[in-house]
Length: 421
View (cartoon, rainbow, N blue to C red):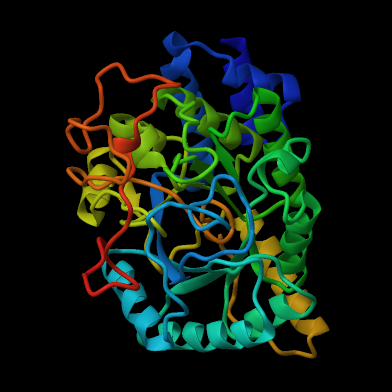
């Protein structure tokens, strides 16, 4: 296809595709899917080889969020039967992080529900970062705490944070239909604060909320303009008890096309396959590794992912390798720019600096919550009576409500059970 040849050439040159080209990727047929994956795979391998970065989520504070994000299981008024607990102690968070690091995770992502942190919360998270780095040598830490006030990004940087995550989620035009308690501009402002402080900025999207192709392209182009180091791509998990509980709009093929479009628009950025991969990609997950260069290991914030060993087996079986702690995630030209930004931020702070921060960040489904994946064989709240837990119809398509695919997390941080790392 001329379209794909053009997109590959532009991706290898880091040239922005036209909006029409990006829309055309989303409009390709299922018959053309493997050609699309192969083309985007050439761009992925040019900048990241066959490396896969592993990331591990630690939910520092779960539930009872005052924001009304329609996709979120922790939102104001949510009836989803998720775990609810207040802040983990630094040592508890460090122990949780160690499980992910032992499984091969290079980055730990610390997430807390809420509109944004107080100064006391920032101090608390700083102590948690110190505990994690003291006990897990070489690990990178990304914070995801919601909207930041002036000076908080700098304080997180000084405390040792390497990155900050805050997702745009959807297009500016439709953002007000998803969330009313804060604005799209608020989110953009927080990403810019992280950049200005010398943190590696991480910002992504959620697909499957009923948005149009134009909305998806809009948000990805906005992300390209913000220039984060990492772009997590989440796929909506329609939690029972949330306003989007019946929004089952994705097929595995559609999810792959979305990932390919993101790779073409953001060719040299860490594209992370985030929440919902197990639910929506299912047996086609290995194909996604040809498009993304980063995934989360094991469980998510409020739901279960596939076993960590299954993730590692998938990576090896698909012919990829886990990225080591001593390897830079980003291509050299991006790492150099990031290092310069860190040095500039340190100079503005009077010479104080934290970690190198030259690599990519983390992404929960909303910058404070996530609804994600099932553990095979696990029952879920609201499951269809008589259905086999975790079973997937052979021809399941978009629009079919399948709550049995969503398993609420009942282990790991905040519980007495070991995590699924």
